[in-house]
Amino acid sequence: MDEKSTGSAQSGISREDVAHLAKLARIDLNNVELDHLAQELDVILGAVAKVREVAGADVAPTSHPIPVTNVYRDDVVKPSLTPEEALSGAPAQSEDRFKVPQILGEE
Amino acid sequence: MNYIKSNASVMAAALANGETTSVELTEQHFEQIEKVDGAVHAFLYLDREGAMEQAHAIDTRRSDGEELSPLAGVPLALKDVMTQKGIPTTCGSKMLEGWRPPYDSTVVSRLKDAGIVILGKTNMDEFAMGSSTENSAYGPTHNPWDLTKIPGGSGGGSAAALAAFEAPLAIGTDTGGSIRQPAAVTGTVGVKPTYGGVSRYGLIAFSSSLDQAGPCARTVLDAALLHEVIAGHDERDSTSINQPVPAVVKAAKKLDVKGLKIGVVKELQGEGFQAGVLHRFHEALDLLVEAGAEIVNVSCPSFDYALAAYYLIAPSECSSNLARFDSMRYGIRVGDDGSKSAEEVMNLTRHAGFGPEVKRRIILGTYALSSGFYDAYYGSAQKVRTLLIQDFNSAFAEADVLVSPTSPTTAFPIGQNDNDPLAMYLNDIATIPANMAGIGAMSLPSGLAEEDNLPAGFHIMSPAMKDDLMYQVGGTLEAALLNKWGAPLLSNAPDVVVNS
Image 1 (tube, rainbow over the protein chains, first blue to last red):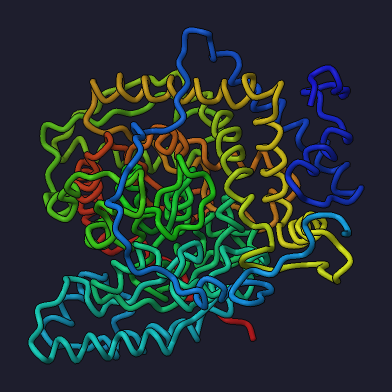
Image 2 (image 1 turned 120 degrees about the horizontal axis):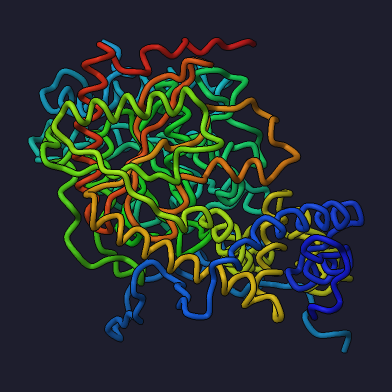
């Protein structure tokens, strides 16, 4: 998304922006939801934008409250889920695999 | 004798000396649940069979002379955000309706190892997003003090179960206050340990840099006993802290705060805080002074920006974490009629499976992380996080613990903030800074606000991995309050009346 494409007054989030975000987030939203969310997000973004007041260039960002380092384990095989257990919650399955709707177009 | 109104530590003692059995305790709690939960709706699922089996097993082991863990045989209510093998786990969402996890979370493994009896799963705001439990896809939980009021959230089910004497112990999770705010508005105790203190393995993720599981109980000591069961390093969580668990049980029993400096945070007591809540807060401070503590005033100017930063960071992380609900491997699948692509089915499923607040936050987070806006929103919020940590460091240089009211108000009516997400978010104004900095924090009852006779919470924050300090202060304050009241605050709660 491009900052220039936004139109509405407060934080600048339009109905079209919400539709684009919904596409990125893989959620079908109907027209009522799009209108409602555009309004709400405008108000919420207007309120949370105050973080910019104190976020100076001299402040380092923090992503995590404690130092995060990669954790390695020994390369040893341990008991884990059986295929049956791993598939136990699958909406559809076939031949010990997750069965999903078509991913590529028609052949 | 009926034990449901006893504390967990009293039940544990009665079990140890043979005055009762785990089977009897468990049956008594199921009786109470049957009696009141139609009105309270604290539980989403009851595992009567599994609970009775565990209770029998513990009683047998005890009568065989085996030395058991201190809470062995005591019942507990589990927030539905935690996986428990074979037990329906919904996280308050239609998305996971009918899902039975194939594995136990680390918290559940430790509860089982300690012989604790898990009664069932408690109601919560969908995916732990909310401050009232009204966002549950399965209907709201009602506050046992007044059934027309919210029990807090997201862990309203766990807190209400304690306040309605349906369980003496519960598990909660706290991303911005979801353990502490429900504790405050139900007159119970809730603790968010230091980030990394309790494993997140099997905790369905909302915002991974903020989520932390912790104990809920009716007393500080009971919370401490449960804390020691669930805390400690876990190799299955890469952010789990590999250090000894602070001695919180010992600290809860200390009942002495002489020489401790209690820092009152200037920014967490002004506008928006209910007069009766502030009144009880100041009375509690007086009791701590009488007990020998010293009050110092501290200022944390960046706290004024904590709420705004939280409502960028948490939605950003949630938009990424909840991408896993793609209808392919678990959870519901909608619209798969053979004509649609995987992506179309995903879109339809996520529309049908997520409620309004979850959609709102995913879209907000997607926006905050999108190119062109990342620096202005998510990046700025991360910088505020740095400022918050700096403020905490300065404040903890002057004080051993920091205190505030837990929630600015007492429980509000169900439905009040339906159309005002920003008003709802303000509930977490005092609890959010601790999550942002990863430090430990607790809420315990400070009394009833005069205006409405509903519980108010006293909030104690301690430096990272010094969780023992908040238990020491909390335990001392609780004893002083109990002495003043003559009986636990919950003895003032009305009996839940069930309209059938």
